[in-house]
Amino acid sequence: MTAKSNEDAERGERIRLVRTALGFETKSDFARRLGIGISRYHQWESGRIPPNEEGIRKFCEVTGATRDYVMAGGTAGLPLSLSVLLARENSP
Image 1 (spheres, one colour):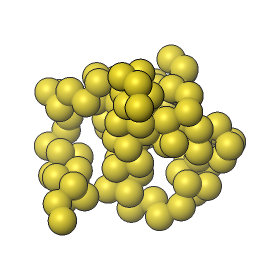
Image 2 (tube, helix red, strand yellow; image 1 turned 90 degrees about the vertical axis):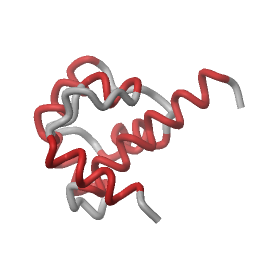
Image 3 (cartoon, one colour; image 1 turned 180 degrees about the vertical axis):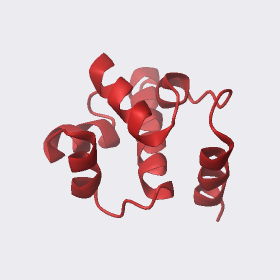
């Protein structure tokens, strides 16, 4: 796996973690909440394509995540409530 594809996969995993941490069990429900098609959302979560700037803005608006978290995994600035949910989602 190349560095780029690994980065894409990690971003997709963060997007998935936020979705599941917030209680959206299906991709389609979450895509509807974001106002995008399921195909587009699936591409984000699978790491095939990154969200565009509008997609990132909407994702962050709906979830409380930060652009830095979505794109690079930075946790500074995440709301405490989301940080707690993500920590629970990451634990075995």
